[in-house]
Length: 397
Image (cartoon, rainbow, N blue to C red; front, top):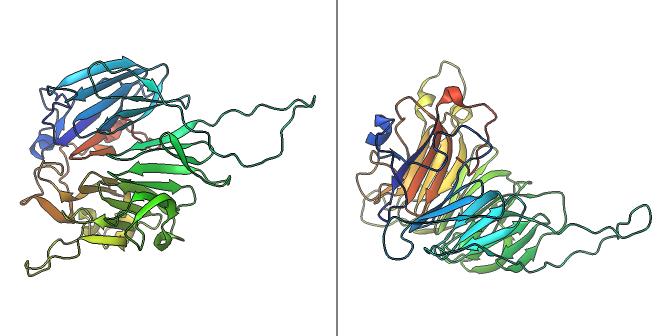
């Protein structure tokens, strides 16, 4: 059975909670089950897609899209529209929500009660000169227009990438990567910066880097995607963009974080051991972490090394908090937690400045995915007996 477990900021009624909690242990940890459009629906073809903004949450199921939260004047307001095709992805920002269809068409909708979908027309990127393709009768073949494959949205940044590796600062074409074999694997946005991961494991960043969130030596604004040189040669398998910080995980199971660390969101100390002086607040270059041993590392029955047992597999980031899924399935967290975005069990103060493990929930559900809103966290879980081994981790629940 699939569950959506939520913790964090919900003052605008962005989420409807299930009245009777199915998991008392999760509730005691600060996580409550929320209802979604596909609740109880085991049909994997039509699954709910979710994206967080600060004052509303966007839900999509098939062609149906709904925005819920503070849309105009009252908390709990809701608007529902129907898209002209199946919805593939959502990216919610403060001023609008991007809607990507399975056909590659891109739309946007404003968080208002009378809002409608508006088609986005993107600027044509410069196309490299290639040999003209013809049919066997000599007629010129018409090439299909490139489709949008990835979208991401932040407070002050909106980006998209098409099937020909053109990067857009919507609606303008920002950069055209050369036509090579690799493809974009992941695209993430913070408040003012973007991260792109390609199939070779290279990470590119652009946008506002004045808080070190770009992973570059200089604290500056980058108009076009720039390779993070300090990670070059390391195959990165996953990335995350927080508000003003970033994170990455390598194929070797190493965790790197960089950017602003005002609330411990990098998993690094805010204050020195004497508690009188602050550690650096900004870390411009990726910092390699030596994570604490996980609980399963205390068992040596298998004789496996700790790093083989509990390396981090996935990383996620909110405005000022970061979460990990380690190989054993346990969740670890660090950062700001004043709104309960890390649950209730970890924080004795307003932030954590070292990664700590979240307590396991009741019947030990399998965490399929994690979504971080600016001040919130959503766990998508299934009971292990109902999860197939090839179930992908995606932004769908």
